[in-house]
Picture 1 (cartoon, rainbow, N blue to C red):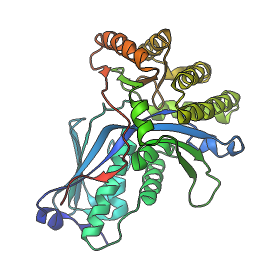
Picture 2 (tube, rainbow, N blue to C red):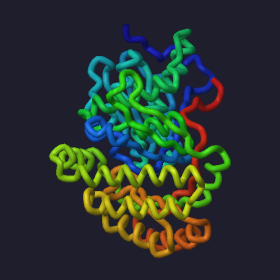
Picture 3 (tube, rainbow, N blue to C red):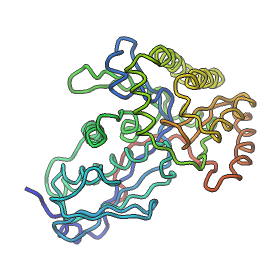
Length: 357
């Protein structure tokens, strides 16, 4: 039966709040089932780095029988009767989460340190944080908490469901576990469709943080439209060989990162981008193409985050080259309305409750 959280949330001295990190990546799109499952024989992988631009979800009391979702970043809100919450609205994923847990009488307030629609996995990260917040609620109700593996599974399945099967797992994976990981996608396996290999320890994460640069182009991206096109081309056989070559390069990239060979890792990013320009030209907006090109002139490698088409670009290189690139990118992005360098580092922690209740 649906349960109102209004009395519980009103009784707490502090609101329930949870957060999770966003991510940058190499080999993204391979985490989508339509690509990874038919070609499981080539061992599809994605490498991602969780970054400390965290997304926060706070639960506040609201009138019983209703669910409200609001975003400080979007400056918008939606509220519906619990029985009428839409799963296809801008906040449909979060209404679906509330519906799954059968909770009403609450407001979910979403706030992120990353720009909106920046290709950093923001909606998936927020979903992970929301489920963690509801897990805290369950413990207060003397029910079993939701473990990390279950948070990852549930966040992915709900988002994939409301988006018609166009979602991958990497965004939720980075949000749940943090750190720098190599993900093996095994959708044919029952129960757990991935294997995670942490490829950098705490010291390695600090070292790579000195050698990455992340910037928002000022242009929002729409991953669903781009991913749908790429999947259709892949299924039609038009780009399949290119994707297989990308996977080979990303495997090499993972090895170089694990060994701390940053220069070689930068070269791998350049190689991946070269293939991507052929098979996914939609990912390269003029501003992101310019940022990537400038990174290569100073000996770095750079690629778009997520599905590209605007959004965020991130670079890898030796510290002196990254320092030089920082000045170049900052100068270029001064000419955009909202673009700029995103100050961040690898986040070693995944999803977590924020503060004591």
